[in-house]
Image (cartoon, rainbow over all chains, first blue to last red; front, side, top):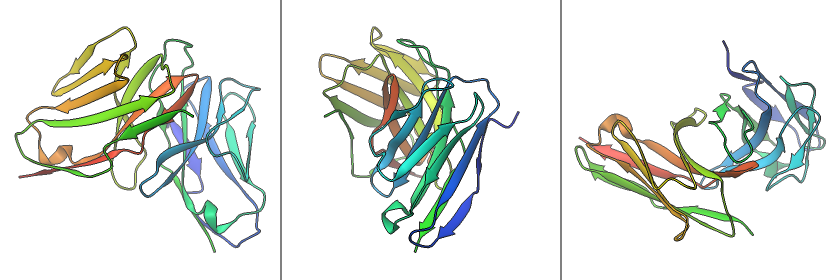
Length: 115
Length: 109
């Protein structure tokens, strides 16, 4: 049982390059999330998917696109990378319980540097 | 806009003392609140969840309170140990899961 798996773990991009961060979970969760974490800023929500086929913007969506490929996979795409997108990216998943809810499980993170 | 604030300054305490971390929020009516622990270089790990109709929740040396009138949660670690040193994040959810910036806790022997 792997939980939440992110690939790659490290990446260096040049300004203007594109790339896709992959995330997969094997817990049959409905909800999946992408966050970025910068020093002193905590975790900021980029995009969120409540269930397969739906996506919604978070706090900092500009410069990113997402695809909920199926229930297991949720990818994050940078179409034209900028130095401001240098960060640690975390994918997470949880059950969606409306007014209830359960814990979120996180991947190990992707450390992205844009030069 | 919705805002979640935690103590921005690191908290330094002596081993054996109780650590108290604060989470305040504005323009938000969360269904429930969660606390996570994050160690350097790793993703956050869930610790406790408390619902809007609950005042207090306990788990071993951890205690969380939730005051929806004050829009505040307090997170306590009793009999703290150096192994408790980490960054602690609160998170609020009504649909989306939104995090505060975290408070770094350092427990000295």
